[in-house]
Image (cartoon, rainbow, N blue to C red; front, side, top):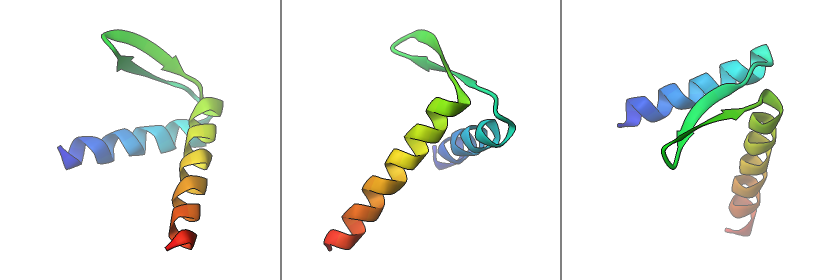
Amino acid sequence: MAGMLRAAEMAREIAIQTNTGIVVQKEGKLVHISAEELRKERDDCEKSSSSAKHKS
């Protein structure tokens, strides 16, 4: 399972680097996520993990 999660993260990073979107399955439906959305998700995640570290 860990390998699948790493592969998904790598796919997201490659999509960001090449400015392409990815297609994922959510709740049984195929959903297109643009590179811009991926960047925002990554940045939001980094901000929340960074602020959690500073609170410790």
